Length: 84
Image (tube, rainbow, N blue to C red; front, side, top):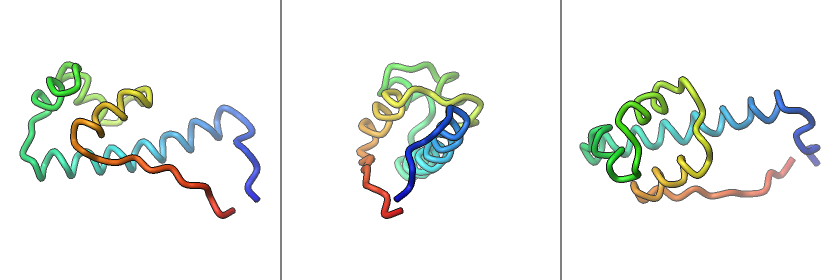
């Protein structure tokens, strides 16, 4: 069984990996739907500049921000227990 995250650096790395995967899915979906960053921002109550920073991965937003974006785009976030 995998031990829980033991330190902040390990947690930050794991969060950034998860975040990167979700942002890739979000980008694919807005391209598919032909939605601009400005339109996405309007859908979730963020400025276009904030959306751009998220997509550039220049900072990691809080999970609730990612959740709002995914909800607006009908992207399900599913958690599952690791088999490790």
